[in-house]
Image 1: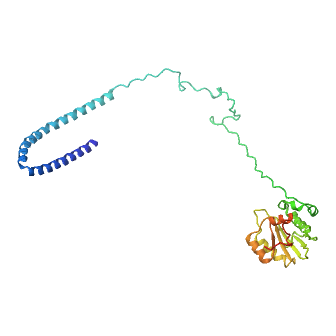
Image 2: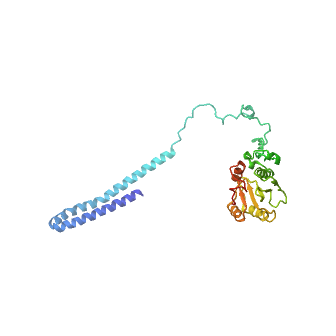
Image 3: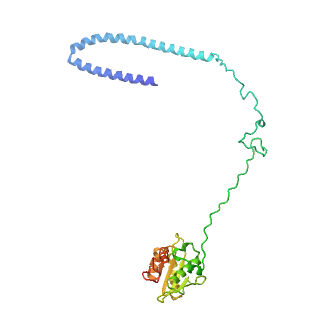
Amino acid sequence: MRSGSLAVVLAAALLTGLALAFQGFARWAGEHPGWAVLLGLVAVPVLYALLRGMPHARELRRAARAGMAEAEADALAATRTAPPVPVDEPAGPPTHAQEPPPAADTFPPGPEEPTLAAPFRDGRTAPLPEPEAPEPYAPEPEPEAAVLTAAELDGADLATLDFAALDPDTFEEAVAALCRRDGCADAETVGGAGDLGADVLATAPDGRRVVIQCKRYGPENKVGSQDLQRFGGTCWSVHGAQLAVLVTTSEFTAPAEEYAESSGIRCVDGADLAAWAEGTGPAPWGPGATVR
């Protein structure tokens, strides 16, 4: 296929060259008619001789192709009838295929290969030992909250007390102890079932009735507006508070602070509680205490 394409390309190139040559010759013959007639008288016999010699050239090419085809056929026939050449195999020790494999029990187990005590069931596999059950997960126990009595809190240094480490009842007693330390001699806890939101009741040094609710929350749990609304619904009408305070070890949400400001409830968060206990911040009824 490649030779046919090459022949077509060559023929096209030859025809193009002949056309260009004929065009140039025609232009030259128009300019020199005498020389053109003379050249034509010489070219006619030459072309005649070439045309007569072309059939002989074709026959020679056909004979050459026939001879090449016969040579190729003879070579192919010689390769088919030639006997295979033997290959000498090198002498060596006998292969594994020539000797039967040794019995499996002739190999003692190695020092790092455990011997299976269970017998083979199907001649090929042995039962594997049961995997050991993982040890059950045991979470680390949380530290127990500190439990202190009212008497112990009155004698303790409240400035160093960790309010978040107290249990809820002890946290209420600690807030009452803070009130007694700062002038509320009658402060006592009243929390429990049916307390209606009041955990500590006290009388401020200026004579106002103080009602306190205590929320011992973790840092991730903030006091929300619903807590303030429930406390606001009972502190004034039920407990007759003249000063309502909500104390927490955590923080207040923004809606809770907005409700507290609108209803007049004072909010004491964890930072304010620490400042109150250390004496660096005011008590909820003292000067500097604000409603928020």
